[in-house]
Amino acid sequence: MFKKMPGDEAQHLVSTTPDTAVVFRPAVVRTPAFVTLVIFAWRFLAGLVRLLWRHPIASAVVAVPCVVAWLYGWRMSLVLIAAAVTVLALWCSVHRPSFLRLVGWRLLAFWRFVWVYRRHWQAVMVVSGLGRHLRGRDYLPHLVRVRCTSWADVVTVKMLHGQAVKDWADRIDHLAHGFEARSCRVSIARAGRLVLVFPRHDPLVTPLPAMPIPDEVSVGPVMVGAREDGSPWLLNVHGTHVLVAGATGAGKGSVIWSTIRGLLPAVRVGLVQIWALDPKRMELSFGRTLFGDRYAATPEQCADLLDAAVAVMQERADRFAGQQRSHTPTVEDPFVLVVVDEVAFLTAYQSDRALKQRISAALASLTTQGRAVGVGVMAALQDPRKDVLTIRNLFPDKIALRLDESEQVDMVLGDGARDRGALADHISPIPQQGAGVGYVRLEASPDPIRVRAAYVSDADIRAMAEAVAA
Ligand SMILES: Nc1ncnc2c1ncn2[C@@H]1O[C@H](COP(=O)(O)OP(=O)(O)OP(=O)(O)O)[C@@H](O)[C@H]1O
Image 1 (cartoon, protein in one colour):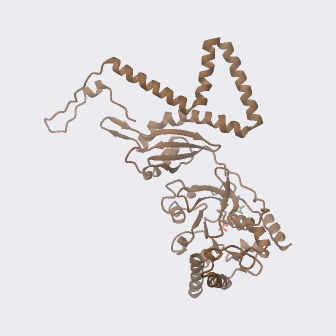
Image 2 (cartoon, protein in one colour; image 1 turned 120 degrees about the vertical axis):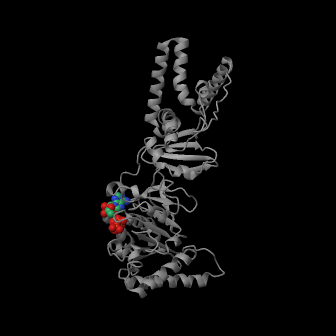
Image 3 (cartoon, protein in one colour; image 1 turned 180 degrees about the vertical axis):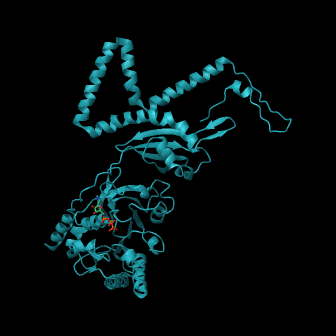
């Protein structure tokens, strides 16, 4: 898209460099009026067809009453409007989801396309540096489409030729504030096209109660909370290792306990064993009866328990060698989930060097060889720096809850995650609003997803322990 300079303005334009006698004056060819008129008429027609094609419902809402008023008078038009409003109100009250899907969100999208995005597009693009002004022409990225969901505007954009995704990812603040949103997330739709997500409100602002204990016996994926789009947040634990990073009070406990809760039916029938390492003695000790004798608190006990898990892993590896390449949980060979609360206590902050080395070696063995033989690790930690947990890259799945510094986001979720909108350092420190909220990046997709873990209360944990004991 570009804006031409008016001819008269260009005629007086003089391009020269100081201290030289050379003066360039552009030649202006006067276009006949009828050519200009044809061009404007063509543009108007093309715009009209595009509008009807893209926004048929919104166009009909405006056009039909006008046509009826013109043909049959304004009274008839008013009757028609009243009838349509009554039908729509009835539809909305009888079946709200279908009304919103087919009418509501489309009307809102049209309104926001015109009023928010189209109106501010040029200013935001130019000020943020995403548009270019070259030789008297404004080159702007093309606003292709706006779609509305229950919580966000999804805006499709055609980048300028030569632009990179990073150019947009570096300007998410400009885009968010320019279009009056709290944040902006960038993902690639296809070559040259981006999808920008602007949340209109935060669907995760209220805490979620503990998920119901599933009826079905399963080793996962387990439902640990909700995703921003309202779908369940399912977390894989079997066949992977999970690292949960978050500052103190970020709600790491809720991710751990929601996972254990989802696995409870499988624990009850012996298809899953939870081995708990609780060096802080605060989190996992509460449901201690769930773990039986597979619970460790002191560093020595933790080292012993980790060595025992390595022994199970090696024994299975010897047995499975040449027989099977993946693990299917059975009562004889259950899935072992080693849960470590605040892993840094056992690694970086451990003063006994021999113990520290033993623990680090065991954790490294489990995270490199455990997943194929049914031994998984779920570790929580506050500080995600490399010198605190040298093996953090051995965890395929990572969850970033509230973090203190912006640099920590990429340390947990990988390069570029924060630029793409994983603002884990902006999560509210108020527990009601921010505890359990975080971002996940799945192995299959580079785009971070915002999630909230359900809160498993002390009473829920007590009930879980009783359910397993029964
Ligand atoms: N998912 C959640 N939803 C709402 N509130 C939560 C959630 N998780 C935790 N909270 C609240 O936040 C407080 C801190 O949570 P929690 O102890 O799990 O954080 P943490 O990350 O484990 O902190 P620390 O590292 O200090 O142990 C809890 O006491 C609880 O009131």
